[in-house]
Length: 160
Image 1 (cartoon, rainbow, N blue to C red):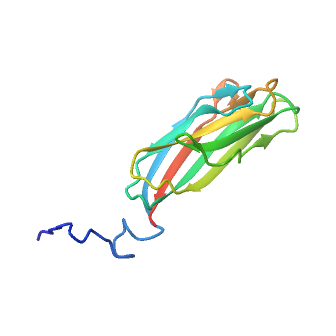
Image 2 (cartoon, rainbow, N blue to C red):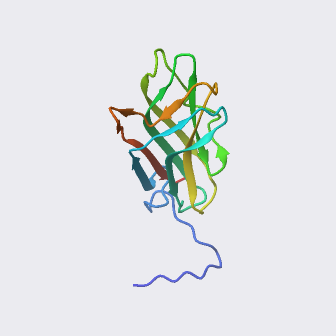
Image 3 (spheres, helix red, strand yellow):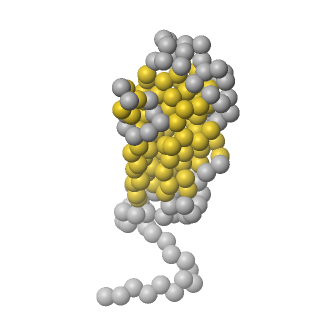
């Protein structure tokens, strides 16, 4: 049995009958794990190691971005801020910022965003970080006893 598509009327998938086109279905998952660290004293956002790339199958898809790691700040006087960028666009304007009560406190950091990139081109999501004061140091991807704790980024393409 063969299927012939002439393209004169386009190609559509009926909702619910094709698992790749049914709304709210996960089409693909990209996951990356890191054991590293980015430190900064910058008050402007700088790129971190926490990054992954996905190529959406459909331009109508949404991408659910999940990022987690352990972080620390050098003193209670300072604040570390993290956000998610799609390529060069800041999606969160600093959502995921952290404050700590104690010197060099470790904390788990989790960020998520549901994005609509409207493309089928390769799209990169990266955590960017900064501090509120150049005298403070933000340790993104903290270590305990010299062993870096695993950080993860997961990208899920969701059909619409």
